[in-house]
Amino acid sequence: MLLGVFAHPDDESYGPGGALARAALEGAEVRLLFFTCGEAGTIGISKDLPREELCRRRRVEAARASETLGAAGHRILGLPDRRLSEVPEEEGIRAVIEEIRAHRPQVILTFHRLGVSGHPDHVAIARFTQEAFRRAGAEGPLKLYEWAIPRSKASLYRGRRLIPVADEEIAAILAIPPAAMERKLEAIRRHETQIEFYEELVRIFGDFREATREEFFVLSDTRLPRPAGIEDDLFAGIADRG
Image 1 (tube, one colour):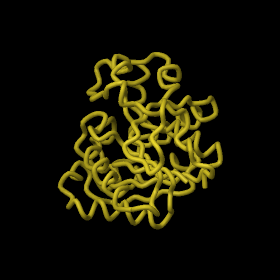
Image 2 (tube, helix red, strand yellow; image 1 turned 90 degrees about the horizontal axis):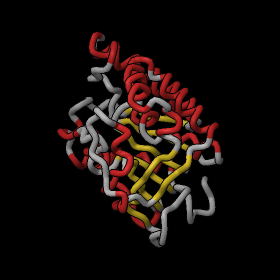
Image 3 (cartoon, helix red, strand yellow; image 1 turned 45 degrees about the horizontal axis):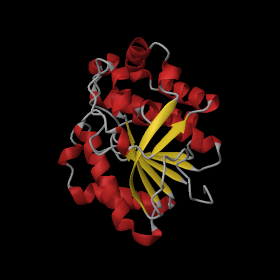
Image 4 (cartoon, helix red, strand yellow; image 1 turned 180 degrees about the vertical axis):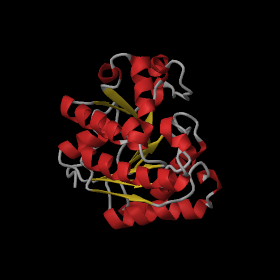
């Protein structure tokens, strides 16, 4: 079982959506935890909607996107968007631990500790998740991965604010097969209030599928032996995907 922990609806699709879809297609149970409903969004029509209405719409979008990716379920905590860095540390950690205890994932997936774009909400989520993994103990998840952009790929994101990581940090490179890519793209389209971001990425990349046919991960923590080389499966070394 794989648990994805994110700040906002759409993080899962624009980020490691291919990995999430691939895991579901390969038989893993996938569940998603969102800390906010994204009510402070400023992309496209988001900036013109009252926060209550934007929250309502993004909750619907999160449900549709999660289903499209093949997730077995998702939960939105409803904490304040753009203010997760102000959430008491113990509250954030406890939320992730509760999700771990409820679903007992073998693998957890979240943002890189630098937040990929440096967004304070992303950074807070990575910190909460890393500490929750540590506290879960021997009965907790076996692996904690951080979705990241390696420095060698940073030039693809020209014009976007990005904090890449050294290529040497990357521990897993996942090829995204066509079926998983189609799910990822359809999940992105489900986030209708955020679709202008996708349109911008298409302008930047040209061929979006080709530019995102691989996703990259740092192995933040593990209870298994560290792999000698680059992994091509988030469940490598785990017999049962749950």
